[in-house]
Image (cartoon, rainbow, N blue to C red; front, side, top):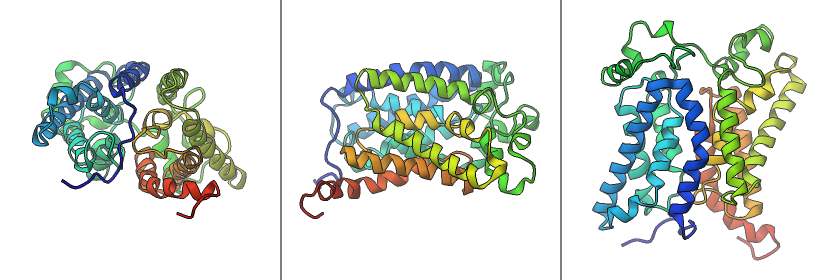
Length: 338
C-alpha cells in the first residue's frame, strides 16, 4: 500500500471536534432554512445522506469498519457545508453528486480523514459550480423561499429543479454579489446598481446569515477549536483590498465593504472552511500567508472573475500552496533551507 500524500493532521478526539463544529453551525443552519424553506431542508437531507452513504462505501472498500468511521461525524459536516452553499429547489442529484465527489475523490482518494490535501466540501461544491452554473445561480427571493411547500420542493427536486420550471423568473432575482461582479459594465454609482439587493449593513438577507456564521465562529474560538489568526486575516485582507479599490474608484465607495464582508459565504468560509485543520497551513507564520492569500483571492475573483462568490476557489487554490508554505516555515524562522 502506498503512503498517503498528506500526513495525518487531525486531533485525537475527532468526534468531539466535529460535534462542536456542528453545534457552531446551528445558528447558520437555522437562518439558512428560514431563507430557503423546504428546498434548503431537502438539500441538507440529500447532501448529508449521500455523504454518509459514500463514507460507508469507501470505508467498506478499504477494509475499514464503517460504523467507527461514520461515528466521527466528519461526513455529516461535509454534507452540511455543501448544502449551505447551494440554492434551494435544485434537482436532487446535484447535492448528491457534490457530496459523493467530496467524500470519494477529495477525501478517500488521498487516504481518508486527516490525509486529504483539499477541503472536501469545497472540492465538491466547486465541481457543482463549474458543471452546473445556471442551476447554482438561481436563488429564490424572500418570501418566496419561505412560502415554498414541501410538495413543491420535492416535485422540483425530482423534475429538474427550477431550470425546467417555466415560472422561475417570477420568484428569483439577482444577488448583490451578482451585480457587483458586473459593475465594470454599469455606468451608474454602486448604490444605484445594487438598489434592492443590499440590507442594513451588507447583502440583503445574507447579512443575517453571515452574522449567524460569525456567532458560531466566535463560539469555536471560545472553545479553542480554532484560533483567531485565519478568520481575522481573511476578513482584514479582503477589507483592505476593498478599501484600496474604493480609494481608486469613486463609484465603489459606500456599500462595498459591508457587501463583501457580510455577503456571500465570507463568514462561513473564514470560520468553518478555511480553518479546516487538515487542509490549512499548520504553522502560525504559514497561516498568515495562507489566510491573506484567501482574502486577496476572494476579492479578485469576486471583482474580476466569472463567479459572484469565490470562497471555494480561493480556499482550494491556497490548499494547493499549503505543502510549500509548511515546507518554507523552517526557512522563515532562520533554520535550514527548504
